[in-house]
Image 1 (cartoon, rainbow, N blue to C red):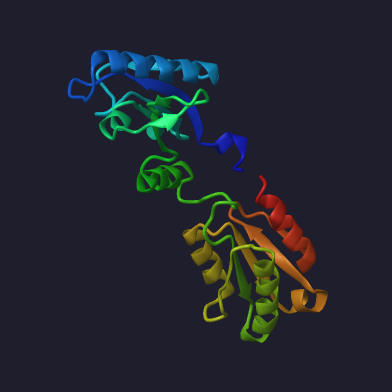
Image 2 (tube, rainbow, N blue to C red; image 1 turned 135 degrees about the vertical axis):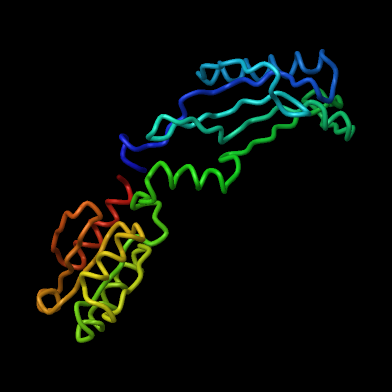
Length: 228
């Protein structure tokens, strides 16, 4: 999980009331709105009405997320649909053996995945937390003489399910550090003669913090970072 101070959080849950253009009778909407509102309250949610909004086929709960700049974004939704089961003449058998009409729930966990991704990127200023970053570690040999050792380090990371790439020594180390930083890769792992001799790796984080440790300890350290 990401650190509490940067967590995108659900700050409000909204009950959406019926729109003007809709399917179904007022009685059916009354029933659907009451069922959805009761379920939300039982779950401990604080509901806020938004008159005139809603889906064509039923009321919904909207989960509003807040980013680090205080902006609010509607993402996940839970919609209660009593219309479509009726149109499909859908039936299930209850405990008494009688045919009853089921209810349909439409659930969008993130909403639009493209918009949700954009919200995350803006929230984290393009620097996703370690657990979420597509590439978590870049391993960089100082010179071509260290590339074989760098591949071994990368294999240790990859075998522990860490997302890792190698940046070969085609540029100076300082340029590769800058490039990794611009890409938002959380960890830059440099290996040179000192690391080869010690069986270690030098880790640099985006905020500039540096630490040198054995490869095994580095694997454990990075796996723990996934839980932060």
